[in-house]
Length: 437
Image 1 (cartoon, rainbow, N blue to C red):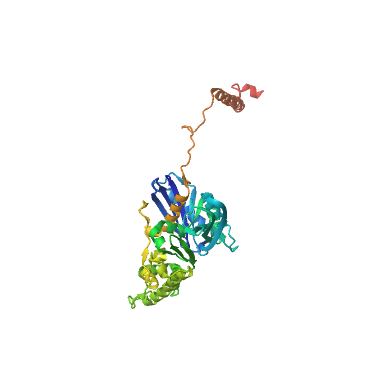
Image 2 (image 1 turned 90 degrees about the vertical axis):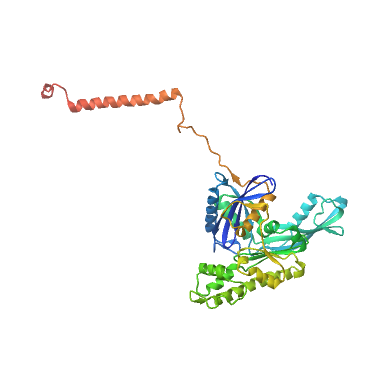
């Protein structure tokens, strides 16, 4: 990566996070500043519903970032934007090419395979946003990188990542059209997070990355080093919060109760404790029931991927606000029988913003790092200051000054003459005898 500034925006159903970082030639990413805004109801299931509200909040984030130390006086002119939402999923497809005998597989051939895969016919209500290679076959051999291999036929299996067109379209209308900020690229958040968080060994062994958000939970499964499965479940932490509101609580209060005293596993603690006249045990029963439903749907994705739990010895890695519910990872471990851990940022990502909470910004940092590695574009610019004269006035030539002075002298002579005539009219002559005649 070349040294430059990178800006990223992650728009989810509960909040919008924007961040600015600086890359180094050694591959390190320094996260300089992070800002976030709550955005409840303006975005639903990853699709922006209220363009005006969302653009206003993004603009607030941009303005605050531009005022931060290490960024000022630079201005954010472009951003990388994360793609997430209920409609994101993968569709497997295979493409192939017949080649002349003894053809060496080149980058051009690999690129053509990917292009052909991107053009694969899918449901007209969906748009292909990425094509992730699963494996290639040259002859009878299966491999991850066929470049340099000799053969007369090559095939490739890709996972097409698709979503509803409204996701990208509404982001463009919000950021590009309303704010006039360039979109340097769209990044599939789940894939970017897997690239940043998961180790090569975990991907080879087989593992599952789970992002439990506010309204959706995203599952990506890796096996033998490549993406094997990608799906989004329309369930998340906000479902638990809304269940608690059934006890005549405001959503904000219900969210606080969930975070501070909620548990994903059943227990007898607080059975006699009342919260606003409501038994803590009743609230816990709601939380446990919904948490079990969310986790059951997550674990079910392993079977949908055509795998078994034993195919994922790398375990389950969790991110997202919903995964931080008390004992949530324990519940996942109980239902799956797999080792479960919470994600951590790699050492080459350094958080310089003292107010940033690492567990809350993994997704936006993943989008930022993907933009830094896939492109050399600069997102920030220093404004060009126009030079002006010190006095603030434009000097004139001597001849111009004389020409401008003459009209003033002429005007003074006119007024002087008029003044004298008025004076003579009202004062009269010195000799009063002339008026008597």
